[in-house]
Length: 335
Image 1 (cartoon, rainbow, N blue to C red):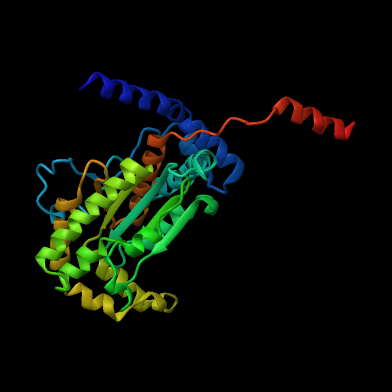
Image 2: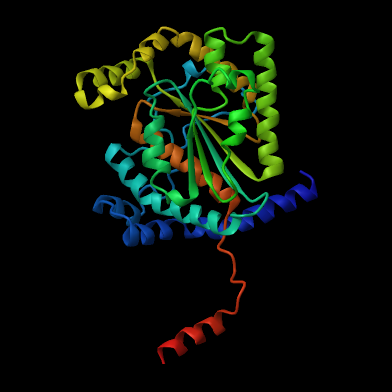
């Protein structure tokens, strides 16, 4: 590694160190002060259980060595976490405080800066994979002031005449924000491939456009891009769809179109394989998160977001006014 690269890496690590050292204390203090979490959650943090657990799902090597298909990756694994559902839910609740703290720092330090830092979470997955749960229980638990959530449906007739990244650019988060794409620009290389709405030449151009677009976001505009495939099994999807039919309170979630898409399951797996092979890049790698256990998927995505914010290492800005003078004026008012 060149001397410049080593120095840059050391500077980044030095900036991140104070944040990492404060992690568990922030988790505990903020959970006690602000969050209604169970005693079990606080106990787990206090006694150090799972302090070092960093569940992130399947982390693919950058050269994709050994990767053949998402079919070979477990949908049920609890990677880097040996706890059960109760433990996972407790840790998720307690660590929300730390993630909220990092988000507030990001907002405080980078808002209103033209190229300020920000995070973009891209969530892809088959129907019922848990995208909505991630939005509600992981990102939604963070202060909504600093979060922007956007869901993408099929383009309208007017939008079909525009470049496929047009809608995406309009929905990007501003500096200081965490942005979430519940489905994204990848729909145009997944569903379009499955249904034959784009030929091989068009798909190749879209992969290239995506890589160029995401690289620009990261290297020129201060983004951290976190791309997640929520990896659910066909069997687990059947269970979740059938539950929606059995329970009246979940009928609103059911869509007959979901059954139509199930018939293309293998084609979708092929489409995900192609998307990962073509767009798994150093600046925006893919994470394949086992999603048969909802609680584990949420914990893993929370960790990936935390990783992204720790890489930024946001800090509260120093006061640009005379703090001592302001205190004296406040005290004088009470005198």
